[in-house]
Amino acid sequence: MKAVVQRVLEASVTVNGERVSQVGPGLLVLLGVGKGDTEADVAWMAEKLATLRIFEDAAGKMNLSLEDTSRQLIVVSQFTLYGDARKGRRPSFIDAMEPAGAKALYERVCEVLRGRGLTVGTGIFAADMKVALVNDGPVTILLESPGSGAPTTAR
Image (cartoon, rainbow, N blue to C red; front, side, top):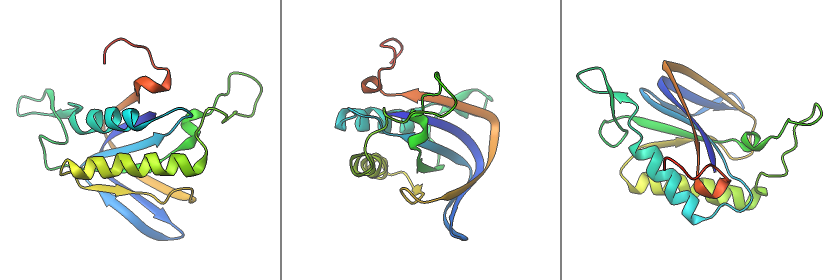
């Protein structure tokens, strides 16, 4: 799994002119599911998202996580994170998981996060979504679960 994690003052997702999710302050997560991702990747990603210390404490240090604060997150499915544009001009998405499996693992990440007591907004899987955000910092972190082929250091 791959994720682009953005610390936001506010974020929202709109589909067909209707707002389907809104948070502020917290995280906006664009989540891609790749071929071969498993429940182990779900567990890793949910743990990392819940405990990633990227919110400032009283001393102004990035030392607090979602679980340490009352912040919320929106998780948006984003298969294009698996786009490979190294050759040619059109990205290849062959490393993205097929839609039915990707939807199940995406929903599972959201379910695990909710099970940790977090408020989780979502987009609508495979919909044409309009995502708006006010990035805070800006702070943007890229995450890759061990099953995605990410380097094995700094887990």
